[in-house]
Length: 302
Image (tube, rainbow, N blue to C red; front, side):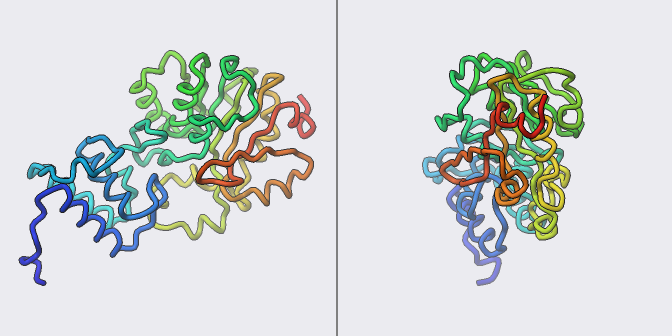
């Protein structure tokens, strides 16, 4: 069929099907909030038109305006030709139904820690109302700091990142969620800006992609800041430093919640004496660990 004989794109269902076809044909890589062409196309259509993102079915019969149609076609072409992750193209990503502004200054929000904060996984903090001080290291867009503030409404949160650009983006997200009075953003490397502050909970989704995996990253992931992904030869460069220094910044009953992707074997081999508690989610197994201060002091007395 020639280009002129293709059926017109009239309804959102037409654009949705067209996007699915193009994405599948292009063999795109996913992992920035979606895992397949159907979900990617649905997210694109709904977010681009600022419709509720939970279900596309109620909106499939809508007819976009000429400007909206042009925007959808542009998004499809850029996604296919430039392999740019969709959240960067539409300027937004979601975790646990919470919307975050995003651009290429920061890693696209995604973390199983978000699932744990929103669920009832029950990492052993005791009474959550007693959590008053939280630290988010490598905060990026501020997404985990915000989810932590929502999960622990009595807590104040310090959020640290080395990137000035990421912190500028985090500042916008914190303001959007009206949490400026509870979240403090600090620039620096890990614990450096914190002086002697101690926390009931430290959370971190640090760079943990090992050197071999960095060399094989799909094109989509190369649009993200390399410093937010690269974790050194074994992926654990920053994790080693977290484990060493965290005890000095944890309260007596506090603990560290950290995501490390697929680095569990390397971590357990490096610290065979540490009793990591692995907290699984519906979509992950052995990617997030919890360890208390009392268990860490054997590694780094403070």
